[in-house]
Length: 209
Image (cartoon, rainbow, N blue to C red):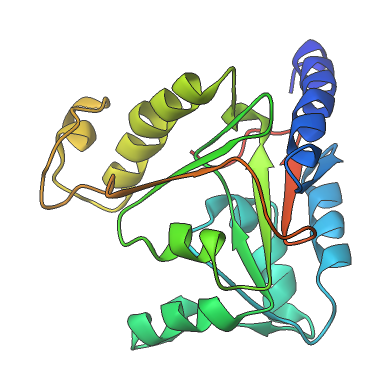
């Protein structure tokens, strides 16, 4: 990463963390992927049950491999024939891993979901939620965050899943009602009523979509 971009991200992260902390959540800064993994594992005691949605960022930093290889009860839904049963296990897990489609400079987290298992677990259920968020996800405000979620994250994910949506074909949102749409549920996390439940690790890298 360019040194000037790295420094800019480092400074901006402090502003975002201040916003996160003001919302009864806890923010952290990781200078690279390795530090992000260490921060996450420091939060997750051995023996904990851990699950996730489709969090590419957790895979990219190497956290998923560490959890699978370590002394953790990692609930890998891809290993279950009954995907619904695996998804339901998330609601009683000790930790749920997620990323964000976007996060504002003042700490508001935006996510869009198709099956809604991810956004529902973020909102309620697991004892703790850990977000792994690359600095490429930071936007000025809610409007910018929504635009990023709908015009960057959604088209890429629709293409990744091989879906037949207008955004998969054009690269931009059509506000569609396609049967394949993944823009079914929108979750804006602006405050946590439960102190200590939501943790956000900002990584000085470009992660996910």
